[in-house]
Image (cartoon, rainbow, N blue to C red):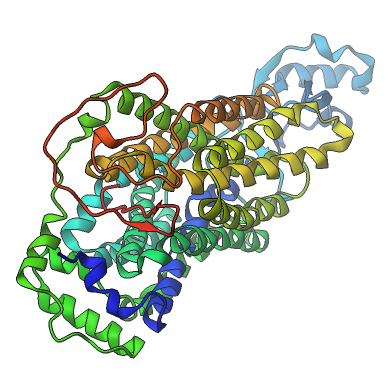
Length: 558
């Protein structure tokens, strides 16, 4: 009996229809590149110091001495959270004309009771200067980012259900509308709490849109194109969206206007509604055979191929519907020693990779040099990273490609601390190399994870792994926040964890040039592990590309 891919093989793999779908769906991912990472500029911390009221009638000399000096990163800097007691300063200024004539270190200090004044050199405003997210409230800034990623985690849970229930196309455009609408509303946030609530909702829309585009592409495109779509199409479009962020932020220095401008990009995608069709595969699963056939007729006309007289037989329609049956639950990911070991290692690696990727992406303002250039380079480096991942997936070992990428990324981050201060640009280069290696590993692990698990739990295994990565992204803002205590601490932590994950990957079995497993018993074994799990299952067809059995990930369950 033919499966869906065999039934639709008459369309060909790379005709005008597939090229259009590849382009427009890749284009739909563009806003995701700047959506989640706009906080890099929206939430950056400007230079600040305690506000000194103008009614003190202090001389210029005394005004310049109201802020104590503190040791920071090896230099004496004006304190950002303390000032000398103003009543004492007023009394001293009345007695001593020159503040240098007294020992200021003996003067009592106090917190910034009148608020803060912020430098306007780089920004007109950020949410930090808007709501004073500094000093005792500095925890609120990374929390704002974590709330967004918590929304992404929530969206991961519901996106598959929504996509299966309402259709890929409806959810794709519905969640794009959610992103655009709530980004516009976020500009009107009256306080930090409302900003966080809206940020959570934006996170839900962002991941749901991404997953819907991913699934729709995998169901509309042929087997040989899906890996290219997932790495080069989606990955590079995301990178271009990320590169677009610093270009806009350079010219717009107010956080409200920046967010509003970026949200307007979503309106440009309205015409795509008439270019992107619904998934014929999903329509078949829902019993909408005529609508599915109409889309396939349109695709055949577009590709100038002859449509078969009978597209689907009754038996084939029934078989397509049966493909949606899930025989095993998530508990089977931990039922045997072998699959439990693979799952535990896999989840740890996904969490660490997410911490590294988002930690490096969100940390660009703390790098040496221009913030906007650093952010642009951090985005641009993802293009060669995705190309390298595509190349490795086609030619080399999954395990050693992934472990090698992680090891390289971890080592260069760990050695950032050893770069002398006068070579800080070299430290930035090392960070960019680490970002390239981490992004490359992220693209590889999607396919590798799917190949590790058998057919009956493959989608479940990939879905749970992505859930774990969301936990890592929630943690990531606090990793670079550690730089407040020691400049290189985030790099030491991320480098060490990444090298640890590279070592863990070596414990996993190899999957390249090995037939994809259908059952848990057929899984490749970790050394010293045995597996017995003889349960009945529904045998799904494997989706592979090329001789290396490259798996195409279905994300409807993610």
